[in-house]
Length: 477
Image (cartoon, rainbow, N blue to C red; front, side, top):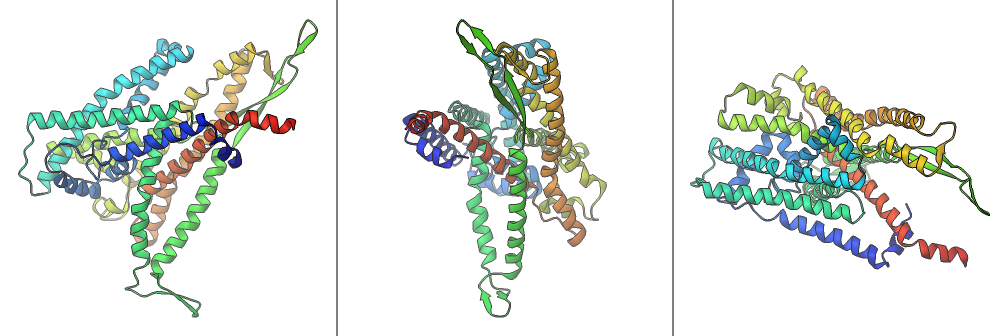
């Protein structure tokens, strides 16, 4: 990264405007998280949400990626889930329907058409999920015996669902505005901001526990006594070391790439010659970035949501209970109730399905963003070729072979990284009889590190573009 160049680029009005626009959008996003849904007493539903989050690990993750929108019962409660689900559906149809695949390969026009269909599909998905969430929360207030004399009317339902749907569509629009600025993916950036916004609360809770010396203070080597809780201190110290190691590994994996040398044929036109130079085509080990993890989490959330709707109608329904149990991530909050006799084979279902989905979505999304046929055609049009490989179909086959090999290792690496929190929980179950509960924080860490690197790379590229003339003038001097 060229951090000096990045700071220098802020003197450029266009670059500064882009950065300020993104910061403004993030501020607007955080303000939206404070606007409550117009549905009865917000404090009543917040209590119901608190009870729901204790029972469902998915609810905790939804609260995380919505920037606290669930816990605060705000209009962005549904978040970006409808847009992500719509994107998955449209991209799957693109691969399944030849006409749509041709349209996706039809340059910018085709991609805009597909994006428009994704936006249209997001609307009914947002309406359905808004109705489901409101119904689940209202039923939770009743089943939990939370004091309320509020009975929603048809008008209340229409108003609240409209507000939540509008909140989801506004988030989709804000994400696209960020993408248009050319500094990172907008949807990923909003999720990144959501997770980061929860850090102050987490740090405050951790600080309270760390400086609670009611059970004694930390004595170092008999000559220094620190006013901190010794147990919490060593746990935090261990986590910091482990987190640093994981972040280092994530950075290395995210930055790994295969370099392919591209040769340009020499052309003679009159007395001038063109080409005869070399360039490179970098192919990242994990070209899909963090999108497979987000897709896998959103995909896994649907069965749990369906199960919660079923149990809201019929609390004793076996199908609904099994869907919630199987498709809720094993965590410290639900381990005692779901596994009273200790770990069973069912505990491994969610991690196994999660790994398979991350693996599959890595291949799937890479095939969308890295079209080998399109790249081969562009190289041939530019008179470029890969050394030792014939232009045309041979180049397509060669690139496909390289990408598939990279995808294999990249998908395994991404899947194993996503599994680290579950492995940690399993070790703690064997050692102490209960998980430590890092599944959500592990996923959040993966998203934060990957999105931060991608956005830094985009900012770096944009900074190099806007400062190119200054760099050229300095070289001449």
